[in-house]
Amino acid sequence: MLLDLFALGRGHGQRRFEQTVRAYSAELYRYAYWLCRDRFVAEDLVQEVFARAWRAWGSLKNDGSLKAWLMTILRNEHARLYERRQVELADVELDELEIADRDGPQSLHELAQLLEQLPESLREPLVLQVLGGYSCAEIAALLETTEGAVMTRLTRARQSLRGVLADITERGGKRA
Image (cartoon, rainbow, N blue to C red; front, side, top):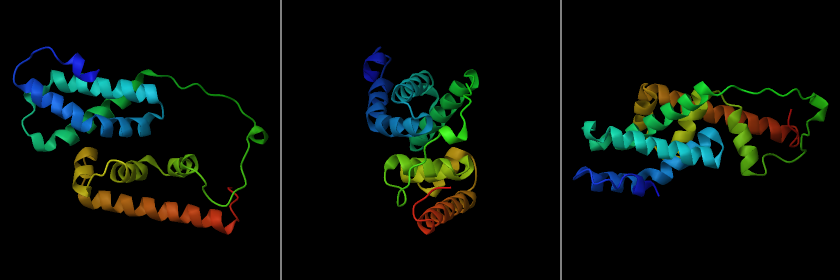
């Protein structure tokens, strides 16, 4: 479906673009889904990334930075999406919330909740490394920071998660 959008016969760059779509669409979708937690929004984000990439395709000079370029477009599109959206708040009493008593995280959902407890400055590099398979240098380029800062954030994120998991284990699996 994505490739049909771009089959407009725009010259020799079309084949290279189609290869790029095939190579990176799954990775972009995975990252988009992590960002928004909605399958349909993630699909729309990936489509918008490739639409924007196609419009700027002629200006791309270095194929080596293609993956980082696409991820940057994705992050920007995700940010634009939430700039326009207004958050709806719901009033919920604390005693209405159910908290499960278990021995540590039992599912991917619970692990995702633990990740959500991390500040975004720590969570984003960790997810890019674990889900995206990016190196510290690639993450630094995506986040526009230094490799040293990325390594520090990754270390702090892991230490923080270990601390939360140790607390859960000490309390016998009961979350605070």
